[in-house]
Image 1 (spheres, one colour):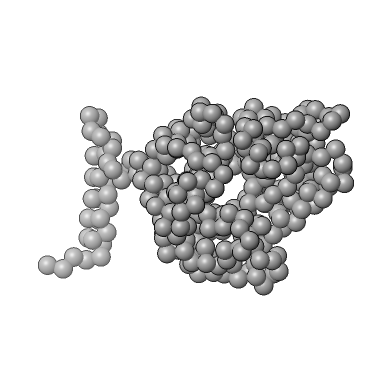
Image 2 (cartoon, rainbow, N blue to C red):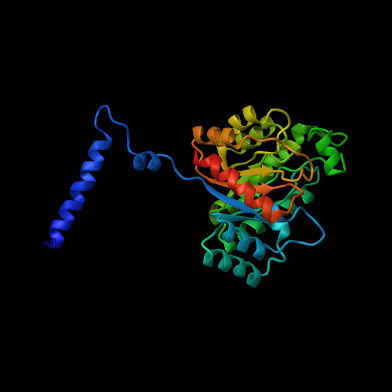
Length: 315
């Protein structure tokens, strides 16, 4: 016998009520449906940096967007220095491509250096940061990556890494001066970020932020909701896990390093199942952005990296 629409609705509501009631009966376990609802899905994106490690020839961001859709990523992080231009037509085309392929452009990763005794030098990077905030708005990115910068007393980036990310200050100055300049510079950018609705995420990216204490000194010194932390899993000296635990409660975005084929600068053995648990326990719900920093073929290594991250964050 055919059911009337009213009967079908009544039966459907009854089945739903029965399922809900059974899930919370004393002595019974919650259903997998409710367990899944209480465990938010961590979205996984890929940084365009994964395909271009500052080589002479830039890997086109358009191709990264196409690759991201093909591999099944949720979004794309754009490395500002990898962009061909800031021309409106170019920028809008990137946004159109991503949207048409079902991808978020969730993060614009920029470079600046606030560690300079010269106010004019710092102002150039303040202005650069503000311009990139406007660029993020045009792209539809809700956040940008910030660096603190570094003294530059060790000229080679690789030599600086080999020294554990630490540099001596310029003669006549101290690290206290550098922290003051960095906090002041970020504070000058804050009204622009708030008005634009773009979060600035400060990364543990060597220089002043090599140590967790240094990063948190800036973060707490600014103490504003429009400054958060971009946690890079590979940018730690020593045991990363206690440091990850300290930063995880403040993380807004996480950059997840992998090193297939050996690292371009160094290689880290990272347990992403352990890292995923640290982040979940801290309540992290943001994007995890893959930064494949190995020498292996990017397309294959990116696909392998995505599987590692998907498996880790699904548990």
